[in-house]
Length: 270
Image (cartoon, rainbow, N blue to C red; front, side, top):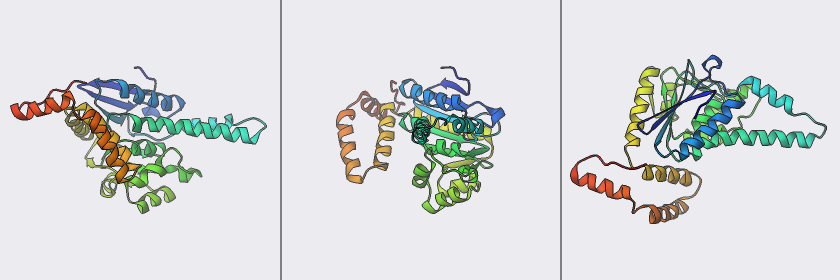
């Protein structure tokens, strides 16, 4: 696929997907939101890809929604019927939410490599990723509160499930910047790195480790984790029993078993 606002490189089962509007601090305009959703839907179905690394070009990871787009949404809300205008705005918000949720729906693990600013909509995006890694000088801010808005694309729904509730509320109410080391302390990111180059190298190494595992098992593990997050333990246990009744006796199981016997790395098909 080719994009106007993203770059995509696929090698050795790893997709390197990057926001590519560095002159705008990777703020997302209408095209960028739509391309992000299209990219994750494509990668979800592209079997050679087993892991995705999401990063940003330039000085920042992502500055969130482009302010010009925000103003254009406001200007589009015309017409004489107030109810229909509000219905249209709600549909616009739901569509943008779906762009972010495409990351979570993607069956492949998504590793966010964050440097510089992760602002506003950037928090929505990384909250939908499987894991997050950052540079020491990266910072996170729920900027919507400073714009007189309520964050509406997933931050308030996903962030409190990733970090302590009180910290999530503090960030959402104050809009303060949380630096990379603090983000690691509260569990928002798994690890921090000294600079962007070491960040990308380290995250790619983790991606390689995941890519070497059974693709079927990795996809199933992601589905189970997401399902269990939104259901109770009994439902989760019932679902994994049903899943493994259908998926356990796979070629991958035999490959892993043979590899353990021969001491050779297993080779899994896509």
